[in-house]
Image 1 (cartoon, one colour):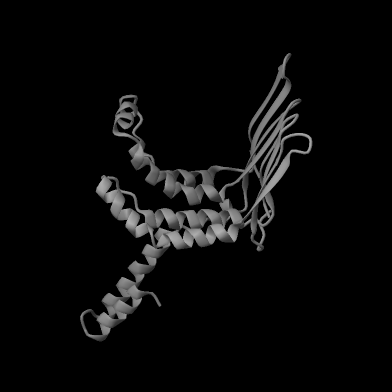
Image 2 (spheres, chains in turn cyan, green):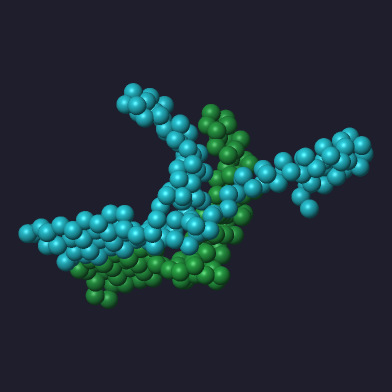
Length: 139
Length: 95
């Protein structure tokens, strides 16, 4: 049992709060715990964002679990606080206010809207490098 | 790809052509234990950042890093990166 839960029970026991108030505190505590470590939704957890670059001289494959986006969105939100003030103002002049970007919400939108299949497919032919194919897809 | 088994090692394999090749195996348990250990230091770090004038909740940062590692380990054996050029080959795998 966590320290917080034990304290709530102690407060009920000594009559500082009523049982109903204690239940409310338990509910708030559980809600807080759920918010602290967001569970990766099942939709994201078993899908990958795959990037393939293929040409005559090199091949690149990068696979990123989409569940990582969810896990890192909170970190990105925190990282936004470390953008220097001058850079922030510069971006605001250009109409970009990074403080208003909610990455957790963005990931939720990706979760709801991203369907399996190709997102990007580029096929080029260069006389020097030959044929290059780039694919980005979700699987 | 999703599996109930969790990956145990991060393998970084590099081949620089010919016999020049090396593999760096990193036990993920070590990273997990390290993150758990620094969780206690996070509170001290919080004080430092407050003095510096920045608001960074290191507790959340460490917890998110643990969540990040858990997410990476969830898929058992999988390849994160494969880069192959004429001479150099680099692979990053989870095993």
